[in-house]
Image 1 (tube, rainbow, N blue to C red):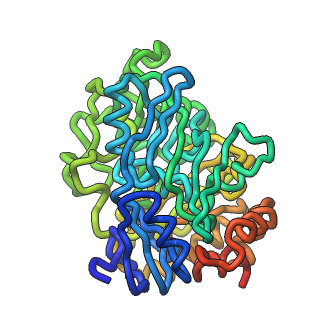
Image 2 (tube, rainbow, N blue to C red; image 1 turned 180 degrees about the horizontal axis):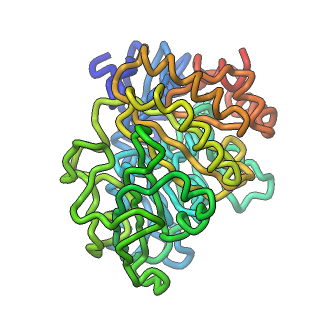
Length: 421
């Protein structure tokens, strides 16, 4: 298979062939005759969650907006559409999504399937605004999951980890478009979170803290605010001990800010401020590795202090670490299931052998806080430990068996981490 690596270059796919169907009918035909198949989005996963040894299927041609429902504030799209294109369409029509991830380059279907998220005390992950979706099952038939059905199945299916089938169509809830601005502050001491955690993270619609773990300080605070929000009209020169930045910043020290979303309070549309990186530039550091762990909000300060104790293990391998808040949800396999959460993200230098050694150290420090890893990123957690963190796992296993009895959409990642094989 040509171009057989993921976006970051750290993972090589093992499939023997790649299909790029032009329509849903071709998806159904291909799935029905395949022995094993997995779906590729934009290849932003860092592990084998989207891999298999047989056939990969790309939805890059199924990337259209199907309908915009003005009466019910919903948009229906094909599964392969990327957030960057969808956002431009929505904004041009006067609508917005509630939140976005730091990268606008990822597909809607892939992001929702892995519970990918943005930031904000009141903002659930990207999958929380899915109203319904269609999936091509192992036999080629199409199943529909919807919030309008009373069986509750959609709560288990939205974060499906690619195990249910091929998501070809998704309907999302949308809201009126809005304007935002963004300010960056430098050098927020970690200790200030002890008494002011809620104050800091409620200071904007979306708030991110960045650190390189070289000391007990966050190098940068990114505040993203709705311009119409009168509570945030005043921009102070100091923010809980951090100082207002006097020029544009990149989260990774030493990198140019040209590929980052506008800062310095410059107003702009929601979709050009919520992501950290611009659609038309290389996101983040480029060649990198990523890990992320979710802890209950009430434990976040102590979890961060626990990581500070091992910063000499972390900082030499790190580009940057980001801390964000996410609202709780009811999605079975979401790391934020039934808990207000804080995500601690690590963007690593591309040194897998060294990172592989430090992940168990991090996970040991976070174990008292029942940390859950991001499904699409790198972790070292034993499957039994991972499975114990999800109370709805038995129900999800049954849902997978119901939709795909022969395991056509399962792979080594799902068999090991979900099915317990």
